[in-house]
Image (tube, rainbow, N blue to C red):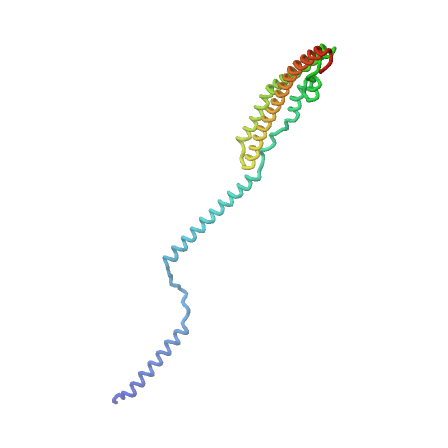
Amino acid sequence: MPIDRENLRDLLTALGIIAVRMLAYSLLLATPAHAQIAVTDPPVETATAQTASELNATNKTLAQDLQENTQTAQSVTTGGGAGAWQSNAGYLSSLASNLNSGINSAGLFNSNFPGWLALPPNSTQLSKQVSTISLRTYAGALAAAQQQAGGFSAEDSHLSGIEQANQSITTVLQGQQLIVEAILALCQQVQLERQLLVTQITLQATKAGEELNERAQQQATITQSNNLGVTP
């Protein structure tokens, strides 16, 4: 039986349609695959590793900063370098008291050195009194100087304590406090120098007052004698 080309064409078309539908149906009903295909991307992996390294370094830096900041906070709030200073008021008063038996005030100065005034009948007794109190002033000044000289060892001990504390300081605040202590020690030295200066001025005033008073009274006495006993 001869093949009809038209029938063959229709048969092939029908078979093609059936094949396509079967393939589509098999794809729709296919079981999902459990295996996964590994995909690699070297540039992305490199960037991720670098970022992780940078984050790790940043964390270490932050931890170090936190530690340093904590140490700084403790350093500026932890004291321990203060307390060495002690008042010099009592010692200065004892130095000044050496002049208590001499001419240590303007009132005593004026009463013992009246200046231009003729010698009275009891001038011998007054001269004895003036010489005595003047010598006591000199003796008191010498005693004050010797008392200060005897305190050098105590001053060295005080300064040694400051130096020992300086070698053991561990915080900024301790160092600042110790600097204040050293400055206070210097201020006390200035006080002692001023006390010596006050003593020296007292001596110079006493010496000058005694000399000028003696000359003035001698001249006043001579003048009064020459004026028939009348003070000019």
